[in-house]
Image (cartoon, each protein chain N blue to C red):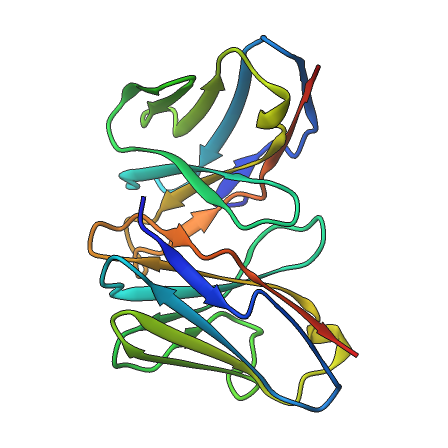
Length: 114
Length: 112
């Protein structure tokens, strides 16, 4: 299957700081990337969908000014959690898809905000 | 009604048995269906995709699709303790941006 990487895998930050998470498709061009959040023992929650070169589409209830998404190229999307607070602590997972439509997930980034 | 419904489980089966995981969906026009496995603390990994009615086999896994009944299932033969995970059913919408909708997942526990 296709390979999607995420960096960092784990991050601890202080409340009020911003954190950037990178998602890369390593062996295919991702026309669309998705960002999910998952709390312990809960299901995946789609946060936003991003297409290369255009603005991300956010799901209802997700603050676009807090969760900044940039999909600058066909292999890279970034999620920046601005002014992070403890309630933003979660497991953030990206996925990528090419025109073949199957979504491949990155390994996830565990964020802990102190 | 949720777009993609799965029994949350846990489904417990003995080692060597067949595990049967079920999923129903509401979008009658959907054409693409996926099963993912998610181990605790890890991200989902794709097991199988299926697009046509009937069965699709890959090793110990068989996906079954019945579009008339809006039902998709995953069978795991010769279940192993390492199969213990949450299994996510995913369905690609036929309209509304063609988004892939994930079920909440079924927890499977294979007893040694």
